[in-house]
Image (cartoon, rainbow, N blue to C red; front, side):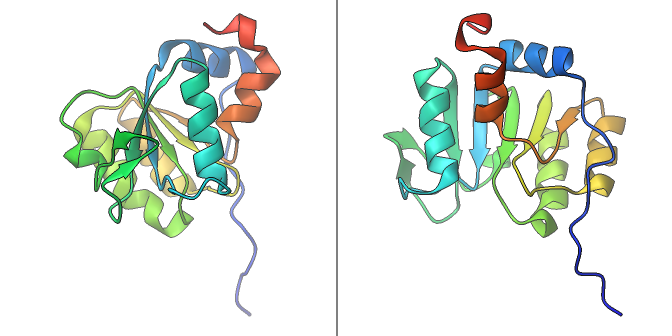
Length: 149
């Protein structure tokens, strides 16, 4: 019998730590950012920009999204980023985690429906904070816009 159920996260940081992540991570690479305005990745990226975050699009098929240069991969970004926010199929997470470790990001945030416990463990063992199966926009709104500059 084939297991068709989705993987559940082994654990996420407590709310206080998520608040700290949202306060400290200002440069966010959105991996899998779609140029289509109707897509969640685009809505979340626009929201983050409105809240004062610097959004760096990552999508190998695009040159520019939301008026910003789009990079093919995390490894192609020529400056330091704080967070990789992942909007992609969980099967692609391990290669992104490897890139994140290589370039030294502080946090990997996997959006709703994105869970990969093995890759998350590898990231944590490398000193990277990991959030899985959570929407960064929802978490930011929960904490209150005034709570996070």
